[in-house]
Each structure stands twice: as structure tokens, then as C-alpha cells.
Image 1: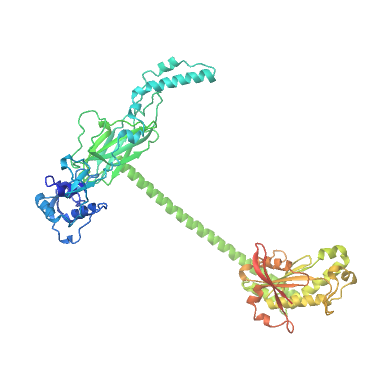
Image 2 (image 1 turned 90 degrees about the vertical axis):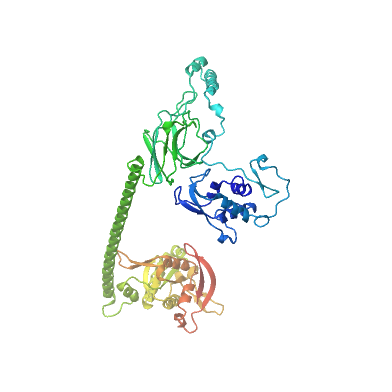
Length: 624
């Protein structure tokens, strides 16, 4: 934008190359015809004067009819990368167009009040006159990332003079003197300082040797190969360092990218400033050294590039530029890097990729095959288990029919066995868990009376399990675990058992025990007599339990959350109390309309409790 302003306001010097840089000739070669649209340039000028950053491709409003000026593609001097711009054939005609278009007050805002500027030649280089009384302060240009001073790039804040060979005198004297002092004070032996200095006499800092570089150009690419450094460098104490990086750089002539770089015959302490860094690579050394190769892609054909390589050691020292460590090449359309180390590495990478893909496909195929085998084996095992279970069910059914008589239907859970004969049970079932309150106390206080009571209790339980179409899962002492097809049947079982326990003729020794004595209500009615049995009822869904067959007894065994939860409900009840969970009432409201006896059962809401392991909230009712 600075050059455009200077061009518009100084008729004496109009660098058309800078203007041509704003018109793309990316897909063309130097000398190809092109067209320059000045509306783009004027748009940049207006944006710059308005305080905003210049943006490429901006146009003035209504500039669609601006004329196009013919020109030729040429290299843009001073560009940060090789760029082709459109240079007009008739510069004077383009200048007249700008003069007639840019007028006071039309494209620019009113000028700010400021002192009259001195002549253009007497002004500081970063200030330019705009119109008659306006100064535009331009920010200093940013340095190119690749064009950094050698010392600041590799040596940080260390002054260059500290790394000269003359600094070794101080470091050597300090090393020898300090070592002599430590040895005499702490280790009881003496180090001769003069002998130490004589051994280090003539030792100077030496940089790594320069690698030897060769470069081969291709189509938009270049392969740079070099030999490892023969000497990694040393410090003032003659300690040899090691190479930690090789820095390979590609530069081009920013003033004329199409011209080969000229280094002259003088020793190379630095590169000419017009050689701008285009790309760089850092290559870590490999064990054993040898030859390294790196490929630079995305280069522009027709541009002369200068490739260089330098070695950096662990002391921060960098090898010097030498003509052996540099090579100039020019990528062209029909070039090729086949046969070079880069092509060998690329083919090696391709083979590695093919090998990895083949290994991946083989691994996937093996995984699929192994998974198929595992699934088929599981399916076969499940089929065998189903056949075995079916055979066991047939054996169990024939045994039960032999016990109950083949001429009539099984009464002990016949519904359950019919479900098990066809497939696994897949419907809701109602669990009932019972237990005698204070049974431990009664068994220790009067063992004979308790044993007689338990035999009568077990007989009553089994009779009514059979009468109510239930199934006895198992027992644990005086506790029974049963399952029924629905809630109504389970409630009928519990109510009839409680009533049978009330009217059973118990021995005097048992009734003399406090947990089994008779109790009456306020109206004088008998409400308890004999053992108090607590009962819990819970309706479990198909996903809350699992059914298996015991390998020895051949009876059905239940397990799962619903089974364990019923045990927790039963343990919460008092003796003689029947507890029902909300699942029973919510899912079986129609079945419970049929009363056990006129007006009953009556359900009393006791509240919400956290039961089971892990505990979960459940509303509990008392059934009367």
C-alpha cells in the first residue's frame, strides 16, 4: 500500500512492478500476456486511508466498468515468495487513468490538520505526503521469518564476541584454578594448575564441519541430499560435542527470482540480503551418520533456488557456509527426482504403507474369522444347554407326575412347569417370603415345644402352597420362599395361612412362651395365638429374576433383583403382618377386585422405604 500511495502522488516515479504484484499470474510463466484492473488498486488505497488493513481483491463501488490494461507477467521484486505480477505495457496511460480518477474529496476523507510536510526527499523514510496536508505513518515492516541474523537464530542472547576463540583463555583459567582449589580443600590431593593450563594450551572453539550437499530439481520439487559432518565441534576445554540437527534451507533471489544467485568468490561469512528464505527443514542425525535426503515440495518452476545445509551441535554452534554445503537448482515442468535418495525413501515409505495396509487387512480378516468362530461356539454351547435343560425338564415333569399321579394335573406349581417345558419363564411372578418371629428365642427356651410347632407350621405352609397353585422354591430353617402366578393368589395364600395358624391347636408349653401367647383386641376378639409369621409379597418383572434347575434336586431355582428384594420386604414385617409392595397394586388392580372374603383385603399405605441391596425406594402397604 505504501508503494501504491507513493506511485499515485509522485508522478516522477511509478514502479509498475509493485502494481503488477496485485494482479495474479499464478498459473502463468514470465512473459505471458495478462490484464491489470486498476479498480483493485484504488480499492486498496481507499481502505488504507480509512484506517483499515489493506485487503487483496477490494474494489471501489461502481468500479465494474473500469478499463482493463494489457500487460506481461514478470517477477515481482522484493516479494517474500516467488510471485509473478502483471506489468502494464503502457505505464503512462495507466498513470493518466489514476490522475483522472483520484480527486480531492471523492475517494479520500478530508485531510487532518497538520503542519505542512517538508519535500518528499527531506522526509523520514517511513512518512509519506498524502494530498496536501496529511501524514500517513506506516508501521515498520516485519522481518521475514526465515531471514534472521545467524547469531540471534542459533546463539540466543549470547554476544558474538563471547564465542570467539579469545574467550577460551578466561574459561580455561577458571576451570583449572577452580579444580585445583576443590581438590586441595575437599579431596586431599593437589591438581597442578599450570599443568592443567599447559594441557589446554592451543585449544580453541571449533564449529562443526560443513556437510557436503547435492540437489536434484524436479517438477515443483527438489531433492536435497548431503553427507554427515565429519567433525561435530568442540568447546574451550576440548570436550567434543555432538550434532543434534541438520538445518536445510531453500532461498531465492527476491529482487529477481528468475536470476541465479551470485555468491562471488570471497569467503562466505553470510549470505546476500536479497536471498530470501522460502522453506527450511530440520533433520535429526541418525546413528552411524551416512547420507541424508530431504524433499522440498511446493516449489515454483522457473525460479532459481539456493539450497544450503548447516550442522548444529549440542553447544549451539553452527557450521559455516561453504560452497560445498550449497547447491543452486531450478525446478522445471519436465524435471524428475526419480533415482535419487528421496525417491528411494518415498518408494520405501510406499512399501511400508502397503505392508501396513496388508497387515491391517489381514488383522481385520483374522479378527472377523476369530469372532465368527467364537460366536458359533457360543451358539453351539447355548443350543447344547437348551437341549440339556429341556431333557431335565422332561425328567422333572415325569417325576412330578409320578408323585402326583399321571391321571391328574400337577398341583405344586403346575403352571410354572408348563412354562418351563416350552421355554424359559418370561412373565411377571409373585414372590412370597415368610419367617417366624422370635424363633431363636423359642427354640432355646423350649426346644421340644418349638420342634412340634415347626412341624405343624411346615405342614400348614406346604398344604396351602399346593392349594393356592404355588411353588416352594426352598426353605431356610423356619423361613419359606415361594412363588405364585399372580398377586391375588399370593394374598389368598398369606391370609389363609395366618388364619390357619390362629386356629391350630398348639401345646401349652408353646403358648406359655411370650412370642406365642394368645392376644386379644379391645373388643375381646382373638387376634394372635401361636407363632407369629411375618410375610412379604413382591411382584417381579421378567427382567428382575432368573430361573435355573438345580443339578442334584432337579428343582427350579430363582435368583435376581426381584428375588432378593422380596427377602428385604419380608424381613421388615412384624410377626403376623403381611407387607405388599406398590408393584403388586399397580399392575394387578383388576385381579385384586375379587375379595378373599367380604370386604377384604384392606390395604393401608405405610409410606416409602429404601429396601434391598443396593437400596431403592419403594412404597409399602399393609394387607389386612
